[in-house]
Length: 296
Image 1 (spheres, helix red, strand yellow):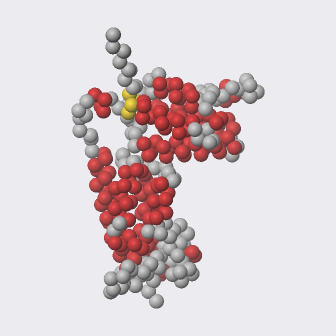
Image 2 (cartoon, one colour):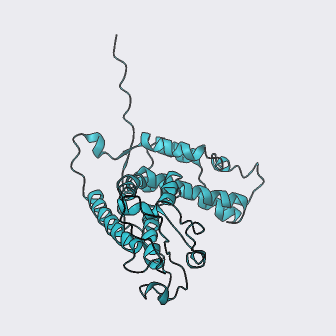
Image 3 (cartoon, helix red, strand yellow):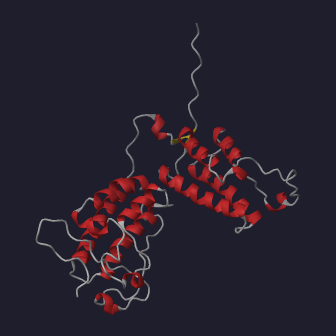
């Protein structure tokens, strides 16, 4: 019995495919020798250039999901309905386009590279489980090529130097006003309360705190530094924010509740900056001062 979708000559939508996915320890005989072991697709850090996650969802995921061949990959494989009991033993890391869209909406990706790796996993899974020549295998190959072509074009357009700005405001960098909402999102986060103001080690009876944490930092200080123009680039701002989380982990330990909260906020910060699309090298521009009132 051939695994995979059966081609239909009618105009009715194709049946859900018995999609074969990848897993560790799959023998070459299960897929015609094309892939003998599970090897999750890896995407090198920085390979997606300046593509933001918002742009990736709009210009990569949505167009691919609308293609005819995407029918097989829009939702998780229903192993019961498709009567493929061996699926869970073979597929240990399933992925589909619908799940990827939900992860994008939930800001679950820290980087665009993580998003791309999940999309590539969809194609890899289908090509491994379904034999060469089957409907699903060939659909995955076609979509993979379409996705890679779009990705390459998008990376090229995002990495291309921007034309000269018509006015000085655009050329001056990222306005501080565009970074304030990001800081406010950290300050209002449910787990950020211990990090909103400087640590009062005297009141907390932590006399050894200054000997361990030689460069204390907190969200109020970061906000003040931003308003005073003390950050030259976005990277400078990110460095101080990350120092908050690292100090908490160093002093309390990674397994403590406050260390765990710091780790959660560190990932939240990465997602927020990734979604913003601000390059680390971008200069931070102070907001223009309001003009003085006109004389009566």
